[in-house]
Length: 470
Image 1 (tube, rainbow, N blue to C red):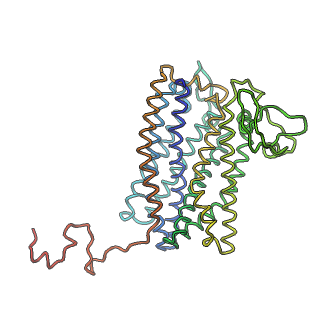
Image 2 (cartoon, rainbow, N blue to C red; image 1 turned 180 degrees about the vertical axis):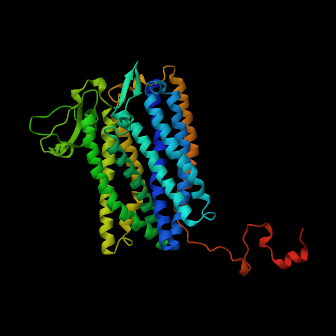
Image 3 (cartoon, rainbow, N blue to C red; image 1 turned 120 degrees about the vertical axis):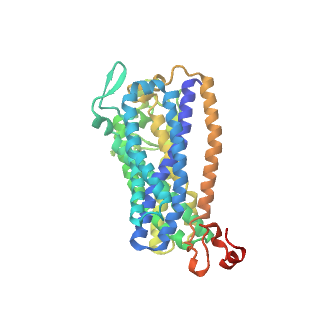
């Protein structure tokens, strides 16, 4: 439990909280753009009712995402000073581009989107919603570009131990960036899709707002039946790219310690207990050759085993192995649910099937869990490197840190996050549980009903005449 290990735990803790909210808001922003676009096209109040409900959820999630992101960025100076010193010339501008092109765009239009619906024309408000949605995607682009460069670095020169940019196009569009970007954006959309579907199923089971809930569930099914299979294909291509550039990570994902007999390929290990010290697996359950088919698309293909690199260059195998199976397992469950739901919709029993609605409810947090599991596979799997193959994590930590300092800050983060984000998540839960409400017509001044905009407007005119006006 030295300063390096505690710094890694602290960064992992903070980024685990942070990644949940931006991923959710990426999907929510596009969902809000879709809802308002449908309302503009049809002028049906149901679309606006859904928009008014989900924009509240978006506002809270966006705020918590911004707060957690600011805290996370401080650690580059406090805990990872040597990383900032050596790789800051590459990472710093990429993060600055994210602020300049995405965060400013979101901030500029967010106020109008949240508070200006009755103050600007409908088309202008829709444009603002589109700009916020675009800003979330641009933000994702720059963040993924920075992270991907750390996994597949190129386009730089090393001068005096410092990474100096030589070709920005090569840095930004590094070999893993397109696959990682597509995988992340789809993961964010699917996460939001299953929250929407889970909330819909909850209200359908309770019988509250069945028309709005049914509309949301059908939209979630329609999107999920397209996005989840597409994510399987993108994930497969991302895996092939990872095998090409980070074969040790793939070996850790499969707990593949040694090559088997020639011509027998690589088995798919369904379950095992990896033993890092002994370089073996206990209680292994495997299917012969299926690993080769999935990893190399051939029955007798092989991948470099963990024994191909020195022990000090191997990542922690157990967390990578288990996290990968959690991600894939949840992905297969989501694929099953959306497929069965599409069939049920076609046959007419989607909204009346208790077990199918319960499946959506149970899987409503599945996107978040799969997202975190995939993130752990990505980041733990590249260890012991912070810039893959070029700079170790142990070379990136601030040299003046002590164990007591990091332990104190980690405990402080955990305490504050438990209070602040616990309250925020609880409020989100209550809001989602309440669900979308039907449109309430504004009071009609001509009929005697007054709006609360003016203090005396609720009083009857005869009462005012009797008492006199100030």
